[in-house]
Structure formats: structure tokens, C-alpha cells
Image 1 (cartoon, one colour):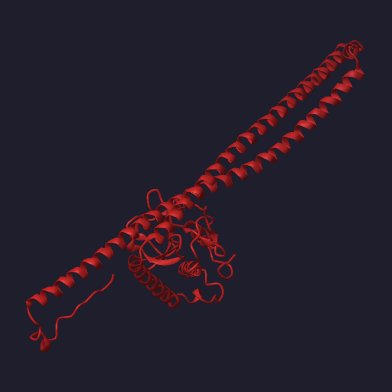
Image 2 (cartoon, rainbow, N blue to C red):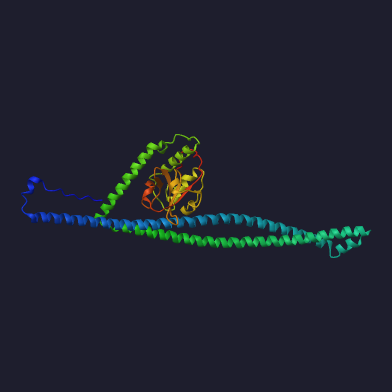
Length: 371
């Protein structure tokens, strides 16, 4: 907010002013200046609203991208398993083929009349029956060999068909992934163009608001440094009590404050988006979450707003397209948007809280990761 103040005339000089017309002129000037300031602030608010809308779209598209990438990772895992099954099917088919080949060779050596000669060359009826049973078993064995070969062949065909279908699905998803990347980049370019197109006066208003937010962020972080000494220096594992574990989770969380936001990012060295940040923190405490906000908020134990506690995951939007980690005192840590950093914000400032999830966490081993 730009402050514009004009004080009243000093009493000793008020009588020396020529006439009411001059006073009227000052009132007009004040009115005109106020109108200009109001106009600037309204224009700045309009630009900020436009940027916020673009940020929300980028956020939603980023989480859609994360979902598609997760599907692709799952398909690649299924393809690995299918190729393993293919190898087993090939080996089984080869084994059945070898058995059939050996049986054909044995049958050829025995000749066409071999079986009849075996039956006729008997000394008694009991011997005849025994030989007949043996021949029957051989026939059943031969049939089993044939059936086994047919099954192995069909299994191999089925696996190969499934692999081709899965590869086709993979190609389709990769195409969607590229489209999503293009859409996100288009929105980011539009956001950059919007920022570049504002005039200096509006930019000054927006910059003042940004400075205020930055000062608030630094103040909140300074408070956290006092509350959690482990934020700036790790001093070893904490006792395994529920409160100590939650405190350690907060220490892990705040270790990444000021890391740049990067859409689809999932590690501090490059930057992280909201779900990548949550995934990275909770993985260090034994909870393995997917890199997708909606899935994160569909897991764990649902919690009502009245029962929220430190360490809960908070989700925003319907469907959920943004997540953060509640750290107590009405505050949560999150990676907000492009051009921003992982920061602390007040939960009361969000009107779109739609999910709170709680997970059983473990003690972190060693200092917070930075890979």
C-alpha cells in the first residue's frame, strides 16, 4: 500500500493564505492524487490477480504432469516385470521343445510296430495288463508334453502381446507428458510476459507488497530458528518419543526453507515443487509418498481441522493441487509457485484447505539430506 499524506496548514500561516479558492485548489490536488494512487493500486491488484490465476493454472498443470509421470514410472516397472516373465516363458518353451524332440527320437527308434510287439510278447494276462498300463502312462506323458508345449507357446505369445500393448501405452503417455510440458511452459511464458508488460508505477506497488511478504517470511524463519535449534545445526538423533519425532520432522522441513521452487522438481540441488518437497521430507522419516499431491492427500489417516497437529500434510483445492507440511502455531511450510522459494505461510491465509493427512513417522537417520 502506498501512503500519501498531506498535513493541515500551520496555524500561523493559515490566515495569510489568499482566499478560499486556494484551499479549494489544494483539496482538488489531494483528490486528484488520491485518485491516481487508488487507480495505481487497483491496477496493481488486477495484475496480481492475473498472476495468481496463472500460478494456480501452473500449479494444477504441474500436478497433472506429476500424475502422468507417476503413471509412466509404473508402466516402466510393469514392463520390467513383463520382460522377466517373457524370459521365463522363452525358457519354458525351449525346455518343452527339447522334451518333445527327445520323445520323437525315441518313438522313431522304437518304430511303428514297437508298441504292438511289446503287448504281444507277454507270458500272462497280468503281464499284458501291466504293459498296457505302462503304455497308457507313456501316452499320457506324450499328451502332457504336447499340452505343455502348447501352453508354453501360448504364454509366450500372451506376454509378447501384453508388452506391445504396454509399450504403446507408454508412448501415448510420453506424448501426453510432452504436451503437458508445453502447456506449462506456455503459461510460464505468459506469466513472464505479464510481469514484463506492467508499467513502472504498478511494478513499484507490487514490489512493495513482495518486500512485505519477504520480511514476514524472514521474521517467521527467525522465530523457527529459536524454536528449533536443529534448523541451523544438527546435533544428533533425538529421543524416540512422539513429541521429539514431530520436532525432528519440523527440523527436517525447515532445513529446506529458501530452496527455489521448480515445477516437477524433487530434490534440493535443483529445486522442488510442492508435492516433491513433501515427498522428499517424509521419505527421510520412513514414509514413501508418490510425487503427486492428490495421491499424497488420499493416503494416511484423514484428520479434521480441529484436530490438526504438527507434522500433518495439508492439501489445498478440489481436486487437491497444492500441499504443504503443518509445523504448528497455525503455520505451514510449502513450495508456493514459480519464482518463489520454499517458505512458511499462515494457514489462516488460505481459504481452500480441503485435506489434512497424518502419517506414522520414524526417526530421521543423520542430518537432513541435501542430494
